[in-house]
Length: 299
Image (cartoon, rainbow, N blue to C red; front, side):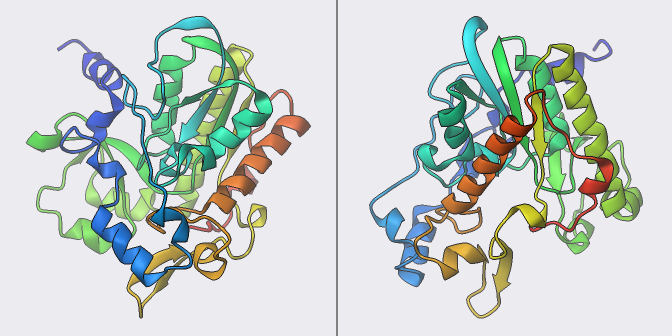
């Protein structure tokens, strides 16, 4: 295999192949679990008694009602991120890209992939930025330790991404091989907040530079506490054995994510308003200063 050919094949395969089995089941909460949550929280989950999530996945594996092919006549906004930007467990109309697009009037190109990190956003943007007449790039990426890697494992021999909440989970892995890193380096360096800030700052500037080279405004935001209501916090209830976003439990008027693990529609509205405000205040784009990345995450 020629140098770079492996990476080229990885970047040009449908994004759904990021699922271990190559399918899309990673996007869904089971119907049994939905029924359980409706029974446990009837007032909060009332919206989901008569509504459902219909993910329209296009030819490239992204959430979109049309396939992606080069078309310079289309004025679009590109959206980057993880499951929050993807709109996991939300109807399309409650996602923050949809809300922003109502203000900009441009077609949505949502390149968000659930479970992925900031590095992946650069590769996908580089691939699709020349497909269309891009007006803006909006990027929301929570402050997570998610990195791209290669593995020798036969079922995942080419690529992947990982997220560790607890190092003990990783310690139980029998076939630990996330190239190019070793386990001690991941624990001691890559999960460190300072290193995360460095990684984010590096990636943000790479994305900003790519957009600037094509005179496209790039807007980045991560989950700083000061931008969200105090009750937009992910918490764990030991008595009920569930993680949930506090605003979804405490205020039944806010439409929750169907799994209660992703932020509510109210959160999406706050996020969309923030990006609209950034667009109005910084027409040429906006990225945070390095010191502004050093903040405690809300998730």
